[in-house]
Length: 561
Image (cartoon, rainbow, N blue to C red; front, side):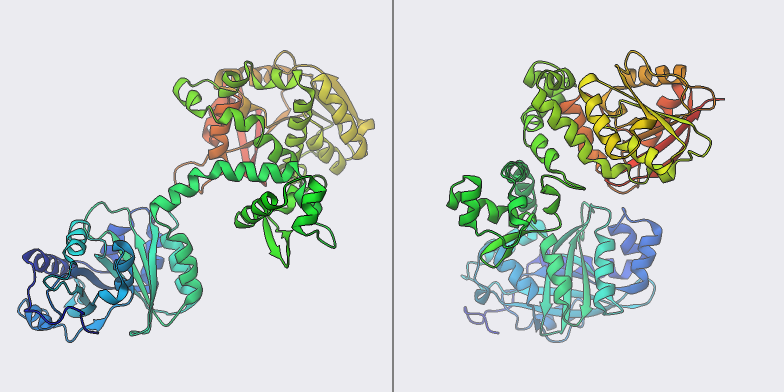
């Protein structure tokens, strides 16, 4: 490749030479283990060892800006760096063109490599990218921007087993802590290698990490490219989350998945007629739902994806009521999240004038939607009947048992049990229907009442499912103490809640739900340790925690002593 501006006497800025020298000193002072520890502080020792087992510290790279490529190897040789001839750069050239809005053909970027031994004596290199900046080329602004930000400075590791599975596993490990982010990559056909870049949490020096593997690995590159959105792009995606909520809510309102989950599937024009919508506007909504992964193109129409199928309006596992609830009253109150954060009070009261529970009670349609929404999360209850020990129990008391889904599953799995369900008057009838369908209504007594005032006595097992997260700590203690007073000494308490993750634990659905509880109910999600402390203060001992579907957990507690 030749620069369109012709040859010019070689000139290299002193700051460029200084960066080359510092890169060589960095290589000489480090090895694979020390560089991984410095760049990836969020990874545990075992994860760093696993990365080290499949990679080797290969080079430290800098970008310099000579006036010409000619004579650069000789100039670097004067610095004690024997580079050999330059080879063309593909990936960095394209990155610079995108970053500064330049034509790729207007940029001449070469790669020169100089061997430098690492601290442990292993073979390593300084990799020098050189962008030619001839006088009058107009590329001085590019050089100034790169010197200021060092976008292309990085530390590289060569993948010793150039296998796509190994490469994909290394990529997943590097991204696992959430602070290291994908930062582009590409295939260098001149060298026959695939390059993946990562931005690390290190605050200065070589901020970027490169994985280089022999061969072309398009699948891994594609996955990495999808993860490498610019920060502004990622922020815009987050900002439009409210749009996605409304798109899903409108899909539920129009029962689009019901209509599209048929044979033959209606065309968009026919679907518009079935739903009473504008054909062009509906097509645009369908396209957006496809971009969200709810629908997928199917010839001249769309079909529901596995993500979209739970939007069916009925049947096992339907989340249809939740879509309407989250896109309806909860959406309105979440718009006042700022009020909740500033005051610590729930935005639902601020928006609707009274607390969520009495407001819904005064609006039967919303109360029914809320009860159906709670029932939509019944998949969380699936394993409870098997995880808990009911062998010695005779009576199970479900406190604020909703529509009876959990109690019905337990009574159905254990025919020797009898049940008691405590609920508000308008919910009791729904619970009766559920228990009749489960075939256990004759073994269950329905009690109308308020658990904040009294709890049925004499049970062997008490259930408290998705109740405590509705209340603050003071109110939770009152509920738990009331239960302790009603429970015999031998009785167990089963609590179903989502748990906030502790330090070093995996992300949890409880994190966004915690903000939802702040905004819409005034309650909160808690860690297992937080629940253990509340239980202990109320006279219980936390005996065990087991995972449940949909991010739930089953906490087993016994009376202390």
